[in-house]
Image 1 (tube, rainbow, N blue to C red):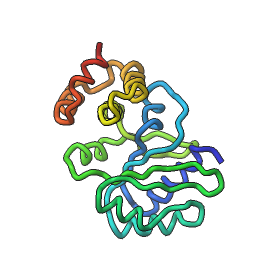
Image 2 (cartoon, one colour):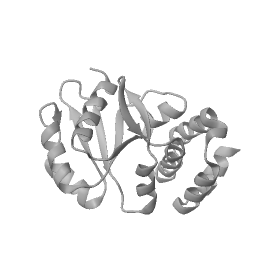
Image 3 (tube, rainbow, N blue to C red):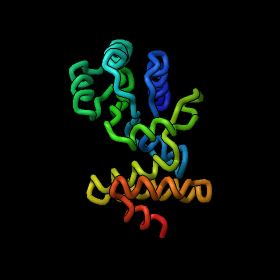
Length: 182
């Protein structure tokens, strides 16, 4: 089973439980920019205690997933892992933070495909902003900046520059956005 097929299993479970989600991280930058190999799949999910509990139960047969880790991630608005038992591929499930940007990020998600199945992805602009945030958090990660640059290059004039400017300022990454534009 491929990494994308494993991600599609998680997406299928999220959709069955009507948990709003967006595939983020490198899978999103691969969709919108220049593809590169990645070690895992990252998915942003809406916080919802009852549905999260049901998600853990639903994934339990094919994945190792800790209910305690999921509950802790919900409480702290962080992430927890689902590791596919057969392939050992990892899916990181990030609980949406309680801030306006993350609400907007889920609202603006866009359709795409993973393993030839429909799925929702972070928009190109939100993929750039998230990569810039990760770069800053990781002390200037060149990989995150390269992913963001790839999205800027591929999307070009289609990007909503006003949206990028607004949220880059709000997220404290306006300087990194300007660096990308140069």
